[in-house]
Image 1 (tube, rainbow, N blue to C red):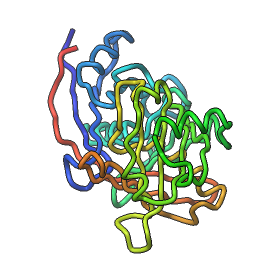
Image 2 (image 1 turned 180 degrees about the vertical axis):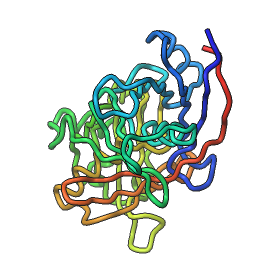
Image 3 (image 1 turned 120 degrees about the horizontal axis):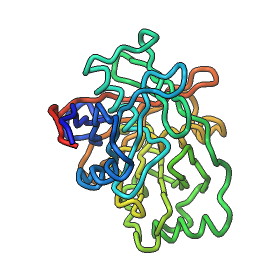
Image 4 (image 1 turned 120 degrees about the vertical axis):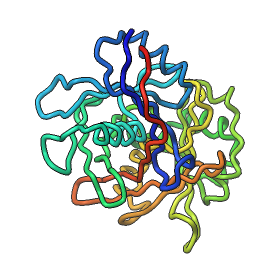
Length: 278
């Protein structure tokens, strides 16, 4: 064991403690997988990350991402929070203003913007309509009236998201899921706010199978939804999603399409700085 620099970063909210926290171990070298997993269980946050030297050309660092229940190949708010912590700790990207992260899905580009950091939404590993069986399982887990459902599609860019498009933000906020029925499913729900609302979309994310019944603000889900919404005309142009309302958070996720790329971002704030002994 040794002392390692550590940060806990609040992501997707300009107001500290209203977003989604991620625990970041800035020097993860020498830790075994089970040691990383044990620390992630101990922090009991939706994700804990470990920064390591990159193993492929072009990357600025390697990021490993753990939930209390296992490792993820990619996740959005840990990507942004870890990049924020790395830059704040003196990390210097190979290209000014742009950071390249190596993780389980490959290389992910990030860029520093005036209002935070954004990552380029990765391509979907699995997209398209859910089967009737998958749709039924998701709707039973959400305990939602099928008449309120516009569509159910896969929006999986690594974690395994199946996404349910509902008729309104109010329907999303009224959800009271059956977590036992949800099992290992990772289910996202989204519905539009009326014009002039606090955001364009309301989003919720449920992942009880990995020890996180509801995630406060979820970059990977919002990135998957953006791929679906923008490619199929569900949304047009840049938009903002609100998430975390049901958990008394106030997350804001910005989505900006540019050519073939979709950038997903928001502000981050370091709340805890120090060291951990691992």
